[in-house]
Each structure stands twice: as C-alpha cells, then as structure tokens.
Length: 78
Image: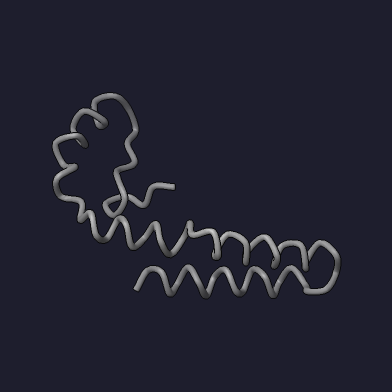
C-alpha cells in the first residue's frame, strides 16, 4: 500500500508518474522502512489474522475489530 508522500506517490496517469519520479528523493527512507515495519511485520499480520478469525467464529464482534484497526491506524499516523 502506498501512502502518498510517505511511502511513494499516488498518481492519476502517465504524466503524473513521470513527474513523481523527480520527487522520489524527497521520500525519507527511514520513514518508509518504519512505516513498513509497523504495517507488514509477520507478527502484526498474524495478530490481525487471529483477530479476524475470532470475528468469524463469533468470539469477538466485528465492531470490536473495526475499533481496534481504527485505533492502530490513528497511532500509525503519529
């Protein structure tokens, strides 16, 4: 997933893509890596799978999972 201006650039066409290439140096590699580590570690992904399975088997309401994800997303933006 691309977060515009943080991990890459979302563009609307070929011209914007060409323009975005000139801005790649503006991305902070440490910030890109930290963002990746928060979102895509095996521990994080496994935890999310477990939470989803708990919803599917009725152990946890879907609203609880959605609230947890919203809270995590808010923490990531800090």
